[in-house]
Image 1 (tube, rainbow, N blue to C red):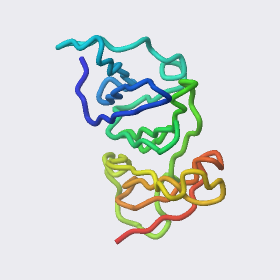
Image 2: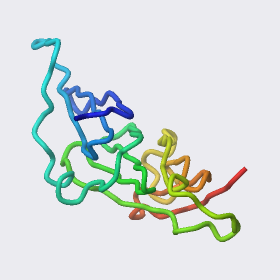
Image 3: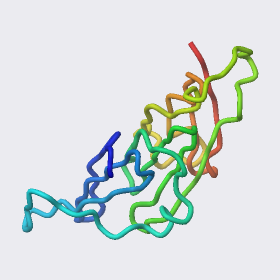
Amino acid sequence: SLEIADLTFVQVNNNCSIIAVGWDKRINVFKDDREKIKQVSLCEDEWDDDIMDGHEDDILCIAKSQGDLFATGDYSGEIIVWNMSSKKVFAKMRSEKFPSFDNNEKKTNDRLISRMTFIDSRTNRRDAANLISSGPYGMIHFWCVYKNGMLMAKFKE
């Protein structure tokens, strides 16, 4: 069953959809069609990349860029950036196993990605951090999705 952890509204060209993510580890896309309003809508067809190369753990959050990209973050600390138009994986990223400056024992849930946001003013910048994640390990991470998900910076309180 779908335990929804997060959702977002997306519009690509004239197509509007609601994307829901959660414990089923899948990208669940529901069309938002004013002509066919239903109380209950079924999920669209599954995305091949989601099944073959998607998350292996519960997805906890989703973030939408101004363009046609969105990112999903999971319990294991993996972030996947998706291309909404092609329905393909655009980039994958994960921080190193443990932060080098913190010697405390790490718990399993320290790896999770709890929130993300795209920096709208940097949507088209190919050389700068344009995605921020909260986690893993309680740190804020800055990623450049256009450089194959390169970690640009991180900090902790």
